[in-house]
Length: 328
Image (tube, rainbow, N blue to C red; front, side, top):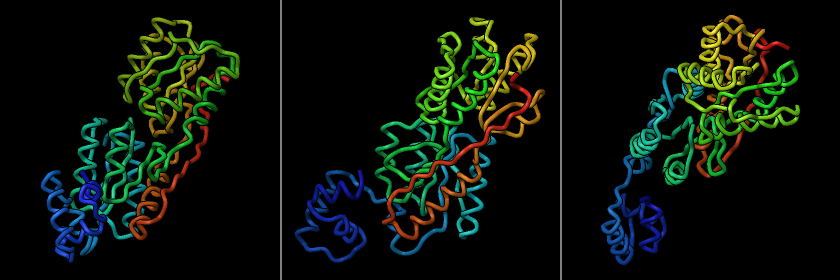
């Protein structure tokens, strides 16, 4: 329930409800309608809405999917740098990739003393859309593209398509895919779509037995590599949607005596520090995570200065980093 819902029920403007809540002048007739609407709906104004009329808190809430991720830490570093330069502090909410926790933190930040929210999204759905549209503070979404909100995201489709095309251009004819659920539009859906299109253009099949979905973890990469190689032992290349998954897969391949890249080539996305330290170093796509944090913070700061600014969309590029894990 939002202030807009109360205004609609009472057949008055949002500003009239706001004046009523803050002790300003409202006609007696409107007061009665507003009071009745509030009683019927149980509406409780957020602490933020009540304090906005006095001064800003200079605090921004940042909702992250997990705290032990290098890519997320790079994003947060970019956010922190930009906010700090503008005199703002950040308050982190770590959700552990739990949707209920995401929604909970968004509500907590909206109802308490933060000036705005930066949300690093993963598996977005209708509940996210409904809540994000109802928040009373400005919000910027990072990592996902949505039509109804300002966002900064990556070119996941083309990064995956180019990486898969590199694999398909070599001697590889039986290429596997280790991904995550398509509910994550960026990593799960767009990277898989790029992979499929690249193989189709090369005249290679995308076979169900060589496609597995899992989690964003080393353990998932390891276990899914095991499953894939057991059901399709002739697989000669693996495309992994993240470096973390790829590194887990590399561990399993070494344990079963597979040489990388002589027997199985492997590629990831993210360009983590660990990927460069692997033996052989992992071929991957570099994403500008820190830049995405800075750009997201800039958009939020602009919205704090001018709430009437239209939503802004920004897609960042990528760079293929060719190392030793692919046999060309």
